[in-house]
Image (cartoon, rainbow, N blue to C red; front, side, top):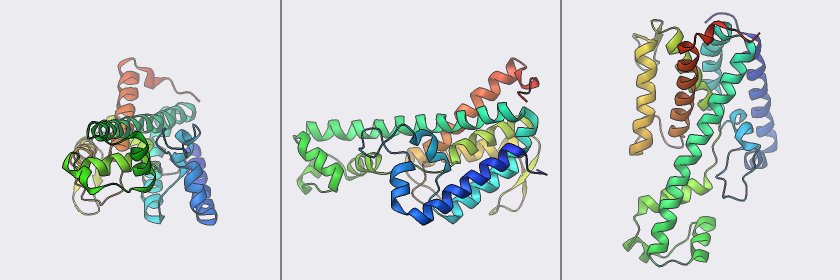
Length: 247
């Protein structure tokens, strides 16, 4: 975790430019560049890429950019510039895919439940747009399902976390015995234990809805980035492709 590599430096600069630009522009930037659910009118295909450079606040971008520098630089040194770029964006796209699939599951489950409860399609669309519904519907559809239905449609995803989780997995596979420190657990933990535990925690939070890190976190995007990162690194290592740097 020494010097910063060239591609990581460029990614850091782009993320900072987006963050400063977002502060200057305001909500319109989030509306245009965040990743919205594909049935939402705000959705645009470019958001699959641009959401990776958007962040929800200073602490969000600070932690992501620290992780990009600390773990991304040694991975770029191992893989080479072009291969690292391919890996980084593939993990980010994978995160977007898994996040969207989970959102679609919640959306479709809620939509079907409301139809079965007798709500008309126009009333369902009004619920999605305004959040307003008759309390009588709660006799047939749970509050949690309604919330997941509404949030899946109206909550955009932002952040480089999906790509970062792919990098974390790559780091754990290439440097399994490197000891890492958690801020809230001041003892060294080897990467091969720390990183799977972190992913398992995200999976637990995504399934149960309980998060020790607070709300508003796209846990399944993290899991998706980690999954795609693992698949790529497993394939490259199996085929000894990691020896071929795409410089």
